[in-house]
Length: 338
Ligand code: NAD
Ligand code: LMR
Image 1 (cartoon, helix red, strand yellow):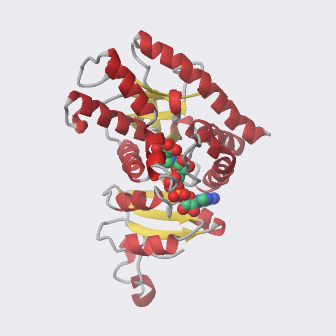
Image 2 (cartoon, protein in one colour):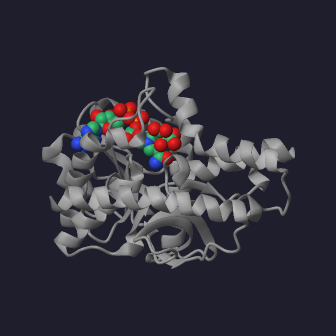
Image 3 (cartoon, helix red, strand yellow):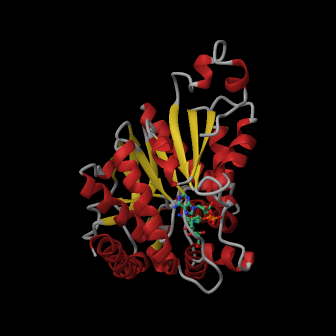
């Protein structure tokens, strides 16, 4: 692996021994797909997170350069780079949290499900490594189609005998980040003051914003509800079209991924009252996976919160979301068991 600095090689570890090994406090975090459009800004933002003591950057290309670059930031985390499949296991050993943005992004005209054929195999291989090298790590899965890749990851872990539903989380935070932004615009509020639960999954109609549960409490006209629901469900497509073939959301996604990873780490540290939306193994509906508010703690997902009261519009949306989700979940499970 490429080390975080040249100091170790040139001067030995006498003085810097503890730091170069990553110190004793803080969490060890790996990013798989760290050289990509999401991976690079995500790596930068995680290097800035004081809860992180060791940051492992793994990809099949370009990690030496990204690692050298990020390692010069004067923040605490020790950064190490890992390149190619033969270094995957080394990248994963000892990790507390593994964030996965590896895989291909959409181009205009594609659905997230069009990414399935390539990304399913990538996620499967990476999760086999996790099962072997850090089976107790919390996994934040970003690779699309999230509605199917999370069930694939669960199957991999089940087969390896390491599946813990509390530790596998599909990242739907970008939907919440978008919803907060768009709702704040309509209400004329500061986005940071707004909290919109978004449940279901992470694609089209499976993205279900619960506008009746927005905090601070507020009301919307039907026109506003139609506008906001459409905007939130199609936020990803808006970015894909604007990027015109150069990929999908990367910067807002890195921001959302760090916001979510930080919540997971604060939970691991034992902070109370950490609640975020995530796509997890769930009994909130009859489906085996569903995104809803979850409480994060020392063991990962410590409580899956009920959906709460839905209005008629949301109940109709929920039925549509469940129908599509059921197919996406089955597709993931079948891929693994084929
Ligand atoms: P990108 O192409 O810029 O980067 C992907 C990275 O993954 C590349 O560096 C590539 O080398 C790496 N990679 C490919 N195969 C790999 C493997 N086997 N092991 C490790 N790394 C591998 O794409 P991006 O824009 O960063 O998007 C990555 C994924 O995230 C896409 O599937 C995209 O759809 C998804 N995404 C999800 C959300 C979400 O809200 N969950 C948001 C945005 C994007
Ligand atoms: C997003 O919501 O931005 C991501 O899922 C990427 C995409 O393909 O839209």
